[in-house]
Image 1 (cartoon, rainbow, N blue to C red):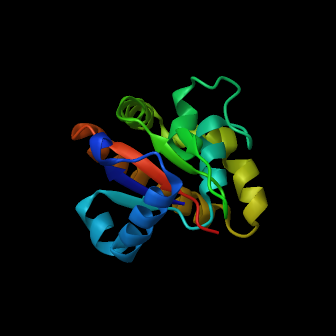
Image 2 (image 1 turned 90 degrees about the horizontal axis):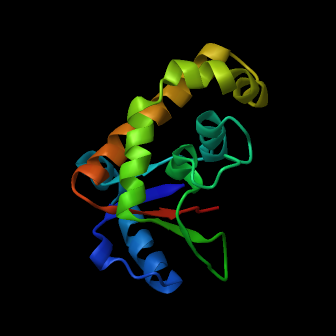
Length: 157
């Protein structure tokens, strides 16, 4: 999962435009992550969503901000792959607000056993991976919210 913050006025809800933009951004991913305008989660994004929502399929309430960081946003269908998502500025703020008050310890206590069971191995190591994902997402969404940007999401697989 590739996340990229951008000004709302510059985003075109067109799959060809988003694909070109996100592919160019991916080419600059390390620099953009260092600048705080990009983030990515290689393969654990569904389990990070489970960490936030408490269930593998996300929150039952579509308006619940716990579902915004990973799978929240407006769908932009693609012919050759999963849809892109655009999380509007207002919802970026809601996601940042949720992440800033979400206690990783409480989230992990509620969902960590199920997530760790999927991984096998050392639960302490798994917890550290998810803590790192959480800390990165807190910083990314807060930075985007602070400057009033929307977030584009691409799932490359």
